[in-house]
Length: 186
Image 1 (tube, rainbow, N blue to C red):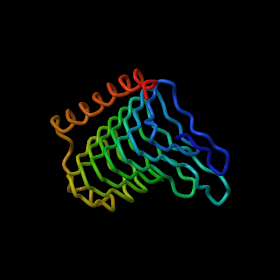
Image 2: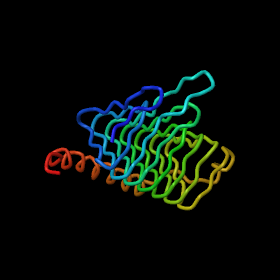
Image 3: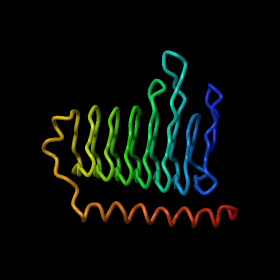
Image 4: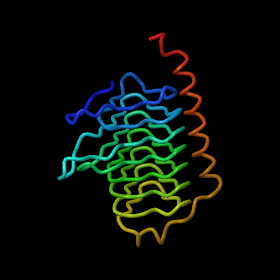
């Protein structure tokens, strides 16, 4: 469902993207080429800052926002999901937040007030807030990272972990094609 926010902003979805009919996109949301947005995802840009303004939530080309993901922004802050990123089932991304290109965010993870650098992996059930994850980092499952100093103990991404992330992205790009092909059959 595509909805206007109280400011009158309407989501802009590229014609090559697929948004599941059960997903909700509300407000100042930009969805780029070949994006997959799965069932029951909610992407909502509707809060303004003290000046009455808001930045957009932008989903970069070839990314996938899987089932039950929630993306929202606080007080008009921006959320930017880079190109080729995977945000796995039931994760929460709350702005201000920047997720770099080719990033994998695992099931049930929470991102808030942070930056996650290109090529990084945040595994399942992790919390990342108030810090800047450098490019190419691997954050293990169930981690709780709340400052830049806590990142000193994190190991860089291995080729195996990057390969998994790339396979998820590729599988979801194929889903975009398949769902777009059968969208009128529902």
